[in-house]
View 1 (cartoon, rainbow, N blue to C red):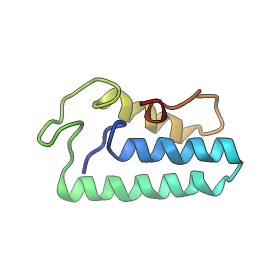
View 2 (view 1 turned 180 degrees about the horizontal axis):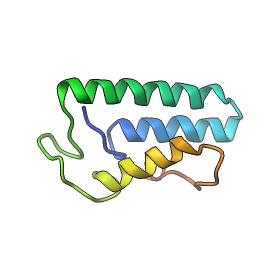
View 3 (view 1 turned 90 degrees about the horizontal axis):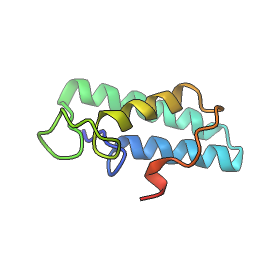
View 4 (view 1 turned 60 degrees about the horizontal axis):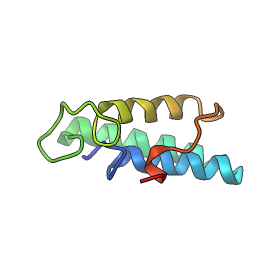
Length: 90
């Protein structure tokens, strides 16, 4: 399971949250939370990496843990002003 913002699951979550913010479709926040729950379950059962297969210690935003952590913060407070997610500016 690829967790990064750049081309992994965190980018999907950020895209759903941004779509919700721009459209007012609050159901997308629920969808992002459900998706993240499935991701975490699969990561626990089958393993995970960030940025590149076999890498679990990258710390940068797009390919590492700082982006994953920021995505979790966005998911915890979707109504807070986060600006444009990095996943949508790449």
